[in-house]
Length: 124
Image 1 (tube, helix red, strand yellow):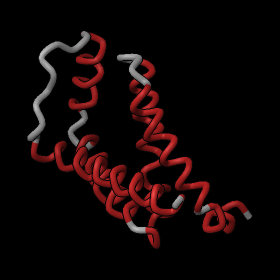
Image 2 (tube, rainbow, N blue to C red):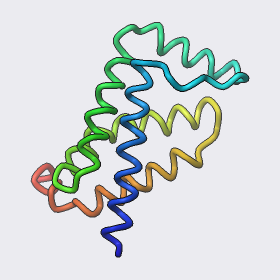
Image 3 (cartoon, rainbow, N blue to C red):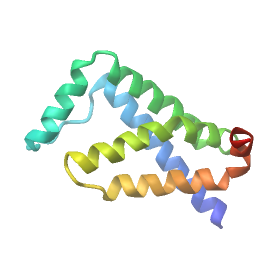
């Protein structure tokens, strides 16, 4: 039962990251009408670096696709980890909405914990 729950959560997590990455290329999700000025300033600064958003998008798409499948989940989690840290820090410093990033961080940590034996050679 635990494995089925983890699979469903990892599937949703991976699809969310694939969707977020594709949205950075195709801009199909509308932006909210009202956003705090601090959030707009941060987004403007990130968009001014022409290479940053495509890099994040590629990492999100590749990491999300790898995260879905059990065989490649450990690699996908390592790829997504720096992006997830950035998401959490961004939300903590700009809009202070931490609930959704905290939930996704918990899923990532759970998946990494379930694959801890695959990370042991990195720690030797």
